[in-house]
Length: 358
Image 1 (cartoon, rainbow, N blue to C red):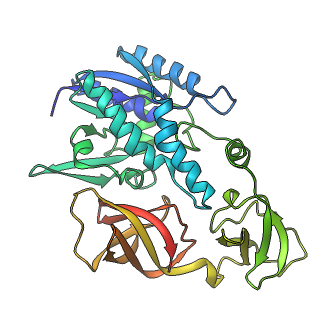
Image 2: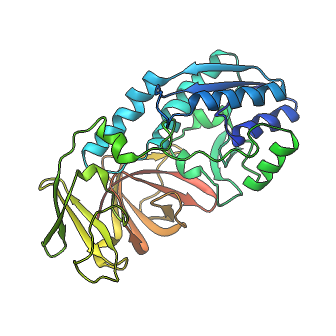
Image 3: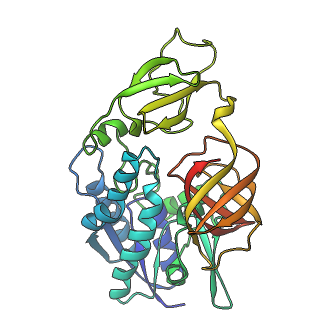
């Protein structure tokens, strides 16, 4: 392991403690603050985040560099996000951001500064065995972020460190407080990576034209109007805009399907409606962290969304880097555009993009 490490400082408590831990272990540590979104709106906190990162680096007596990847973020991540939204899908830009920005452009930038490794505040672990690198879950199962890192490759893992993988979030905050770091009580960031929390429909309207259409029940009855399929996701319950007077009053409505050809939103009543469930899905754009696909008929665990408990499944590999995933149990709201991530015990094997339920 090299001794010079550059930490990606976000201005949050996690990256702050990552830098603290590495300095305590005697590494030559420097920090980099990335600005990846040019926006002066009330929702973008880049300037405040930078000030917080600077305060932490001052406390730890560490140098802080800044770099702007805004153009690269827009071309490599945000453009993909918009194209997927236009297709009525539900992409996860944070996953692509990790692959293209944090563990590619930032990694290249850090290596150009003479770093041996980069480090981030992700809750995950990296293990090396016989020259092979594995991505493992962090011990804090509530904060584990291996799901968002499944697109990393052997090169990225070989030059990366996750200092927080063996700690819980509560202990990280304790360490930050004991070290008098300015970020010790800072709220965790949510929302889209580098874009922040904001009114999502209003934000999308800046980039994609509305295309209103009918809202239908599964029986074909028109019961409302939607403003654009991009504003909805499979399994959504809130914000559909259907008032009383339709169906059984005691059961909430859920988005079951988005029909792009007819520009129709199909909704159903009740969380247990059969159209919301399936035991199979088709996934494409597969990526394997170990660089070798598993054997056909491989049994493993999988998540079709970040907060989901691991689900038992079997993979049937198809041509064109795709697969059919057969689950042991019915899965709620299989959503095209989202990522399915595969695990074997604590190890993250890789994943792919959900194309459709079967």
